[in-house]
Image (cartoon, rainbow, N blue to C red):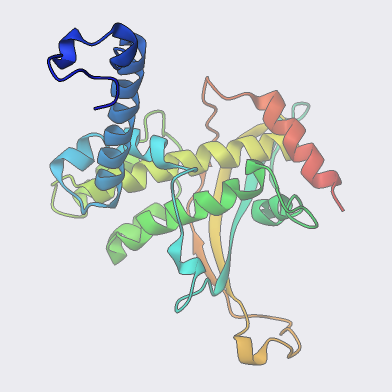
Amino acid sequence: MPNQRPDETPDERPAENRGADVPPIAKAAAFFLVGLVVLHFAVTFLWNAPSNPIKDSVGEQVSGYMRPFFQQNWSLFAPNPVNAEDEVRVRAQVEDPQTGEVSTTEWADATRLEWTLVTHNPAPSRASRLSSNLHRRVNSAWDALTEDQQQIVARDYTDMADWRPLADDLIASQGGETSSRVATMVRADRVATGYATQLAKALWGDGVVAVQFQLVRTPVPRWDVRFDPVPENPQQTVRDFGWRPALVDADQDEAAFADVVDGLVDNP
């Protein structure tokens, strides 16, 4: 080896010729980063794995970590590109503070409001895909239900302090045994109701007492007919969910949500 006498062992070489020890902070940082990578791969494995007891027990935490940054919609690419426009529509029952009369609003298209952030914007904010992600989540939960259970979620519910009535009806429809599909549907229904409530309050004020949402899917033209005139009444799939009492989470910032919605309404 360079600069080493024949009778000199490696430990007897001058200190400047020996490799410096790795600082403890560098070792700690390396272990930390390796741990993060291992944890990420473990969570990703659970996210993609079929339903199992471990996944069901930590499903909410896994979903919160994966969405929205690590979730991928691979149908964006061939041979199965996205072939439909998915929208969430919301309407509300609003109480007049003077008369106490309750009126029902028209349907508001939440997704088309958010799409205004995408037009001519190569890097839109996350607000442009909130309802699109919501549609995917609720629609997937709905698809996993039986036909009887799909009819149950289309019912109106007035007392939903803990969403137990909906869960009980879904469980009863499958013989009294709970399942992950019921838990997933109840969580998705609650999230959608919270979103619908915030949108309704931003559009129609604090008098909102109940909300209803629906999922709408409109097929897009095939590539070979892309230049044909757009039909006036395109075939759509509409999935209606029943009325739910207004739901406001204590951690939500209503003022910030309303500011975003006001900006969407003002967009051309």
